[in-house]
Image (cartoon, rainbow, N blue to C red; front, top):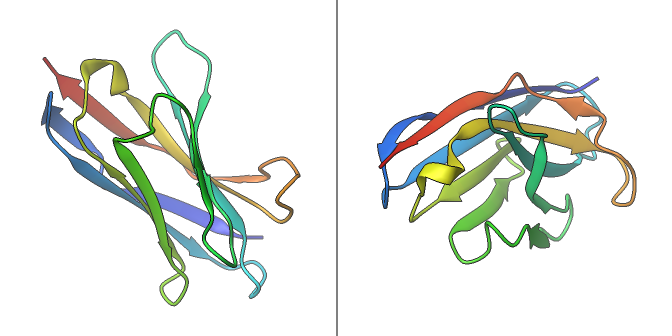
Length: 119
């Protein structure tokens, strides 16, 4: 079973940037399809974006398009979420997740990292 650990969260002013990291350990050597989610207080968890394990194809929620970029370094078993032009509404706990199948559900989750954007 893969273990996921997020890092890089913090407090940033509106318009600023943050880069989150998600380090994976254990699990299958063939790797996983990875995703980023977030959950704001009082709201449901929502998909931010994802990246495939082999070719690095990415997909994004509308709220992330043009501002957020997901990348991965398979040699380091790490996935990144670069967030630019941050807004107060981006404030949330950000989670990374992993799945075996591109069409399946995300099965493995990290503990989350807090991102707070001040106005």
